[in-house]
Image (cartoon, rainbow, N blue to C red; front, top):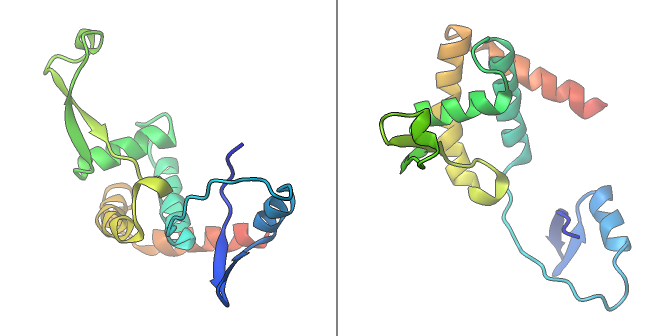
Amino acid sequence: MSRRIFMRKRQGGLFPSDTVSQEVIDAIKENQLLTIKILNDRNQKHHRLFRAILRLAFENQERYATEKSLHNAIKNANGFCEVVPISKIEKHWLSKGFKLEPHSTNYDSMTQAEFTKYFDKVVPFLVDTYFGGNKAVIIEAKKMLDVNSKN
């Protein structure tokens, strides 16, 4: 079983940074061999703010059926994608021979610096496209996060 836990380095050792991580560590058997992958995770609050703005954009449109399809379209519109040839099966629906394949924005695929660059490009696009340039949506998204963090 694979689990993601969060650790902090203090006084030369690694310690769980939250109760869930502590519980996972407590469940590990003595002398159990583990493979550890060390990642410098992105700023969780920054990532959650982006997701909240994306959620508000999704709720403020009618074209896309899912938040994921909206996000993929936004990535493509902002050049966060690559052009790939289509398969023989896809030729039935697509006539140009190529399609845009959006890159991933998940934690393991981007550094914080890469995410910041993405955020700084995409959020103004979202604000202009889905909120008529009204930057108050960012404040609204921050309020959403504050309410959810209290629950």
